[in-house]
Length: 379
Ligand code: MN
Image (tube, rainbow, N blue to C red; front, side, top):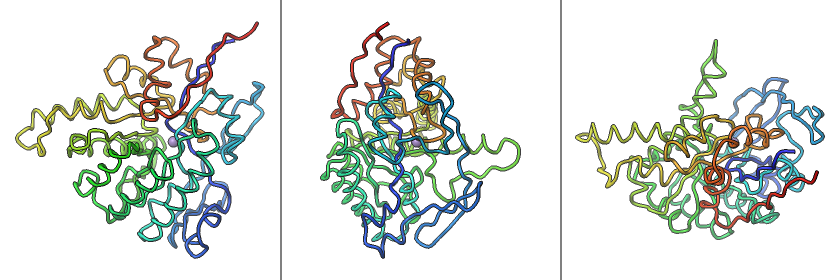
């Protein structure tokens, strides 16, 4: 039997309970919150505050059962996707100890334009996340707070509230919400300052670009083009904070780009340094250090299957590389996490392996506990 590799996951999700918004908010507000309804085998309808659009349903996925047989045919739904206690069993089986948890239906909240609705939702959601999710295993579960971002003051208030209820992380869409300033705008400084002060990490999960920036390639290769394109939003979010000097002004600010891979960081760092140096006559603001320094120090990046991601850490000097299982999503490693970890990490030395599975994660979230010691399997 091969050794079990315990890892943390910097990219996981939970499915909200059925009727979630109505459980935590007054009916008149809950009725306007995002909901997703299946309308055929291929399509589902997403409705957010009276506006609807259609999107394709994720495809059926076959996973290996615990007994090694292909027993489970699931559609985007491992056993613990919605049930937090069943989830802990899934995590133990997969070898995932602590994990960052993003919303599912809640991710559509970025499309809410009414500042009062989104502020009320964030308050209710973040109290619920702290008491019903994080409290189940506070040393393992790190749910990301929902943020109202239509208005900077509301965002700052929500971040302090998230810190007050005990959360460690807030989530922001890669594309700035309609009507709000872009992320390189100094208007966001109070939010970066609040994150710096409280120690809360800011996460950008890829695929949350929103309206105009979302891709819509069609024809041959469209699915692959769209998949790759959806990673770019996280890269832009990171670049905006670096280039605008946000990290220079807020030295404790740390950002997690979830599910976007890791090898883009050295690449973008090189490009930014070249632009900063070769086009210095056009560059404002003048940062005290080359952009790549801020990118390497303040930005953390999670990957799931990428063959080249570990090399960003051991070969390219970028230390903030984290594994993410993307549980329970079809893009994730559920059912084959150990296989994936072994295939990517077996050749690495202990330092690199520890950094990618645990070190970088524990730097962001020092309160999490250590996974069980690995003991040799009895023969
Ligand atoms: Mn994910």
